[in-house]
Length: 130
Image 1 (cartoon, rainbow, N blue to C red):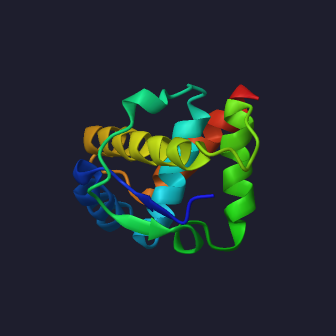
Image 2 (cartoon, one colour):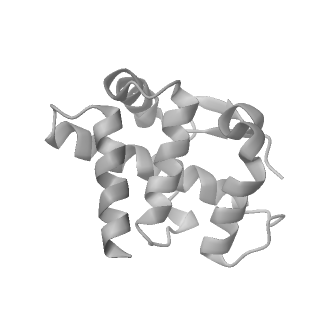
Image 3 (cartoon, rainbow, N blue to C red):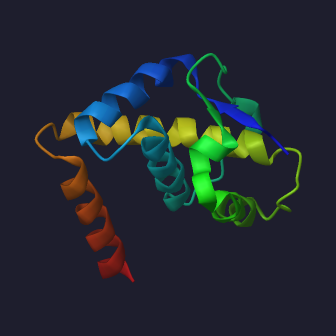
Protein backbone atom coordinates (compact mmCIF):
# COMPACT_ATOMS: atom_id res chain seq x y z
CA UNK A 1 0.00 0.00 0.00
CA UNK A 2 1.34 3.43 -0.89
CA UNK A 3 2.10 6.02 1.78
CA UNK A 4 2.55 9.12 -0.38
CA UNK A 5 1.34 10.45 -3.72
CA UNK A 6 3.21 13.04 -5.77
CA UNK A 7 1.62 15.00 -8.56
CA UNK A 8 3.46 15.78 -11.76
CA UNK A 9 5.78 18.78 -11.79
CA UNK A 10 3.37 20.67 -14.04
CA UNK A 11 0.48 20.05 -11.67
CA UNK A 12 2.37 21.47 -8.69
CA UNK A 13 1.54 24.96 -9.97
CA UNK A 14 -1.88 23.94 -11.27
CA UNK A 15 -3.11 22.74 -7.87
CA UNK A 16 -1.90 25.97 -6.23
CA UNK A 17 -3.67 28.10 -8.86
CA UNK A 18 -6.90 26.10 -8.61
CA UNK A 19 -6.80 26.35 -4.82
CA UNK A 20 -6.62 30.14 -5.02
CA UNK A 21 -9.13 30.47 -7.84
CA UNK A 22 -11.80 28.04 -6.58
CA UNK A 23 -11.54 29.00 -2.91
CA UNK A 24 -12.90 25.62 -1.80
CA UNK A 25 -10.23 24.78 0.75
CA UNK A 26 -6.66 23.58 0.84
CA UNK A 27 -4.69 21.91 -1.94
CA UNK A 28 -5.54 18.44 -0.66
CA UNK A 29 -9.25 19.23 -1.03
CA UNK A 30 -8.68 20.36 -4.62
CA UNK A 31 -6.76 17.14 -5.27
CA UNK A 32 -9.68 15.10 -3.89
CA UNK A 33 -12.03 16.95 -6.21
CA UNK A 34 -9.63 16.36 -9.11
CA UNK A 35 -9.49 12.63 -8.37
CA UNK A 36 -13.25 12.21 -8.25
CA UNK A 37 -13.79 14.50 -11.24
CA UNK A 38 -11.42 12.39 -13.32
CA UNK A 39 -13.13 9.18 -12.17
CA UNK A 40 -16.52 10.68 -13.08
CA UNK A 41 -15.40 10.93 -16.71
CA UNK A 42 -15.61 7.12 -16.77
CA UNK A 43 -12.35 6.59 -18.61
CA UNK A 44 -9.66 4.08 -17.80
CA UNK A 45 -6.19 5.57 -17.66
CA UNK A 46 -3.12 3.54 -18.62
CA UNK A 47 -0.35 3.11 -16.05
CA UNK A 48 2.16 3.40 -18.89
CA UNK A 49 1.07 7.04 -19.27
CA UNK A 50 1.98 7.99 -15.69
CA UNK A 51 3.68 11.37 -15.48
CA UNK A 52 6.73 12.35 -13.47
CA UNK A 53 6.46 12.60 -9.70
CA UNK A 54 8.26 15.90 -9.23
CA UNK A 55 5.30 17.90 -7.98
CA UNK A 56 3.30 18.34 -4.81
CA UNK A 57 3.61 15.47 -2.33
CA UNK A 58 0.74 14.32 -0.13
CA UNK A 59 0.71 11.66 2.53
CA UNK A 60 -2.35 9.48 2.14
CA UNK A 61 -3.68 10.69 5.51
CA UNK A 62 -3.41 14.35 4.45
CA UNK A 63 -4.80 13.69 1.00
CA UNK A 64 -7.79 11.60 2.04
CA UNK A 65 -8.25 12.28 5.75
CA UNK A 66 -10.85 10.02 7.34
CA UNK A 67 -12.13 8.96 3.92
CA UNK A 68 -9.15 6.94 2.69
CA UNK A 69 -11.13 3.73 2.27
CA UNK A 70 -13.85 5.48 0.27
CA UNK A 71 -11.47 7.08 -2.20
CA UNK A 72 -9.38 3.94 -2.61
CA UNK A 73 -12.57 1.92 -2.97
CA UNK A 74 -13.79 4.16 -5.80
CA UNK A 75 -10.52 3.72 -7.69
CA UNK A 76 -10.42 -0.03 -7.04
CA UNK A 77 -14.01 -0.43 -8.28
CA UNK A 78 -13.30 1.67 -11.34
CA UNK A 79 -10.45 -0.64 -12.35
CA UNK A 80 -11.98 -3.84 -10.97
CA UNK A 81 -8.94 -4.45 -8.76
CA UNK A 82 -8.56 -5.32 -5.10
CA UNK A 83 -7.96 -2.46 -2.70
CA UNK A 84 -4.58 -3.99 -1.83
CA UNK A 85 -3.44 -4.13 -5.48
CA UNK A 86 0.15 -2.94 -5.87
CA UNK A 87 -0.84 -0.52 -8.66
CA UNK A 88 -3.66 1.22 -6.79
CA UNK A 89 -1.44 4.18 -5.84
CA UNK A 90 -0.44 4.63 -9.47
CA UNK A 91 -4.07 4.78 -10.53
CA UNK A 92 -4.76 7.35 -7.80
CA UNK A 93 -1.85 9.47 -9.07
CA UNK A 94 -3.01 9.14 -12.68
CA UNK A 95 -6.50 10.34 -11.80
CA UNK A 96 -5.31 13.21 -9.62
CA UNK A 97 -3.02 14.46 -12.39
CA UNK A 98 -5.74 13.95 -15.01
CA UNK A 99 -8.38 15.63 -12.87
CA UNK A 100 -6.17 18.63 -12.15
CA UNK A 101 -5.69 19.14 -15.89
CA UNK A 102 -9.42 18.73 -16.57
CA UNK A 103 -10.33 21.21 -13.84
CA UNK A 104 -7.69 23.66 -14.95
CA UNK A 105 -8.93 23.57 -18.55
CA UNK A 106 -12.55 24.07 -17.50
CA UNK A 107 -11.84 26.84 -15.03
CA UNK A 108 -9.59 28.68 -17.48
CA UNK A 109 -12.28 28.53 -20.17
CA UNK A 110 -14.80 30.08 -17.77
CA UNK A 111 -12.81 32.61 -15.77
CA UNK A 112 -15.83 34.17 -14.03
CA UNK A 113 -16.93 31.01 -12.23
CA UNK A 114 -16.11 30.41 -8.58
CA UNK A 115 -15.63 27.06 -6.89
CA UNK A 116 -19.10 26.81 -5.38
CA UNK A 117 -20.83 27.62 -8.66
CA UNK A 118 -18.60 25.14 -10.48
CA UNK A 119 -19.52 22.32 -8.09
CA UNK A 120 -23.23 23.16 -8.16
CA UNK A 121 -23.19 23.16 -11.97
CA UNK A 122 -21.50 19.72 -12.08
CA UNK A 123 -23.88 18.27 -9.49
CA UNK A 124 -26.94 19.62 -11.33
CA UNK A 125 -25.78 18.13 -14.64
CA UNK A 126 -25.22 14.77 -12.99
CA UNK A 127 -28.61 14.76 -11.27
CA UNK A 128 -30.37 15.70 -14.50
CA UNK A 129 -28.62 12.89 -16.37
CA UNK A 130 -29.82 10.34 -13.82
